[in-house]
Image (cartoon, rainbow, N blue to C red; front, top):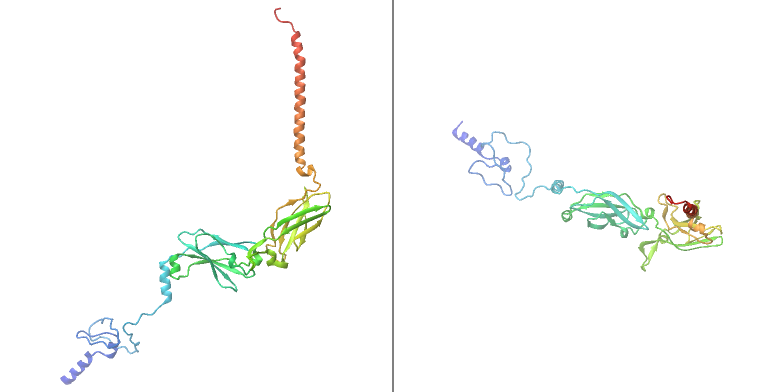
Length: 342
């Protein structure tokens, strides 16, 4: 083989291939200029020429200089969570509702963080209450106006930095709550009562709710429950424990009673259609006073005490009288005795 052929083979061997140029590897100086649009950033390892054969498999297309790296949202979210430690979440979440005034309560008291309450309805939009509060209760009455809707409360544990960074904070979820089925009926207000002959009349007033009509007047529980609402009167003879009851859907009771006895009573609202919380709070206990004797007024125990005291006073007076009588008789006998030594 001629020297020219050997030189030609050596020149071909030393010439960089297209695959090496696409892989951003340049031979030792003088390096060839990189192709336009290619990023030559990886060093060449080993001596030139490479001791291994060129790869046969097709190579991926080159990435132009300045092309951003792939974006991985999960990795970014994980990294941000590493920078913010997890906050405690609320526990012991309870709904407390009387006459549709509803208070949400929970634990524990926050330290270096705050709470925000979100009310979620099945058919209504989410509404926020008590934003960034340090308290452990929140009045949510005004966002539960649709009393037949079923709600859940999300209590978020938040910091101001998390709110600014739009990170989703940890939260706790309450049990479901439907005001129409769960609110407790308050105490009815007894306005007037009389006992005339054998008839007891009791007139009372519906409890009011926090909700108002367009004219600004407050709605009563009757305005909301309508025909589902009833009232029960419990009554009994004074100084007796046997109770009777009567039911009405109006604002008053008319009961036949014994005209010679006085009666005590109270009124309670009820929702018969409910499975739970049927009976509401009881009104104050009141008693009639027609034909009330002194014995009925004060009871037999007072007279027993008075009788015992009277007997004790009489006994003491008798004992003192006997002692004084004996002393008077003993005094003349001493005067008649002769003096010693006379």
